[in-house]
Amino acid sequence: PSSFGSKGEHVIVHALEAMFHTSTIPLDAIRPLDIKKFTHSFLVPYVATRAIAHQLNVSVAEAHTILLESRQAGIRLHPALDSDEELDRICRS
Image (cartoon, rainbow, N blue to C red; front, side, top):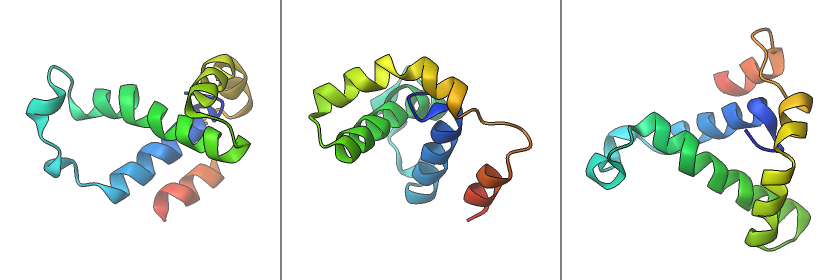
């Protein structure tokens, strides 16, 4: 999670899964991680950092700092709840 919170993380993962077929990722390149850990540990933070940089018109380094500093606020402000209709609509699209 980041300043986008758990909800944002789910949206990013859903978008990545829709854009890229996991079968096309060379697993040797990400070992010892599996695709899920690689996605959550590297791809989600990368996409979130780039989104913050774009939204705030700051450098990627500044965006990464913002991502780290806003993590707890994002978790509180944007939780992914089991009964989240907005998140369900996004994931169905």
